[in-house]
Amino acid sequence: MSAVMIDSSIAQLQRLSAFLVDELGELREQSRAETIEARACKEILLSITVLLPKLQAARYVVGDVREIEKCPSCQDG
Image (cartoon, rainbow, N blue to C red):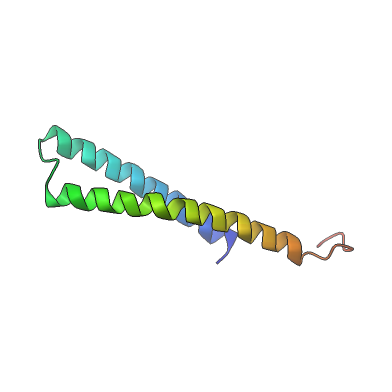
């Protein structure tokens, strides 16, 4: 998995998370906070909060691997 793909995935999950937070706010305003829809939003948000830090950590590992793979004596890498 490339760093660009990881960065893209992180950005998409952050947008999805913001959307779900907005949806939950609207459901609360409509007094429908405990509907199946609200429970699904909460479950997805929980999954995203677990996944995002893992992707962010993977992003740094991918970056570190690229640094290791460069030829130390080469100027271009």
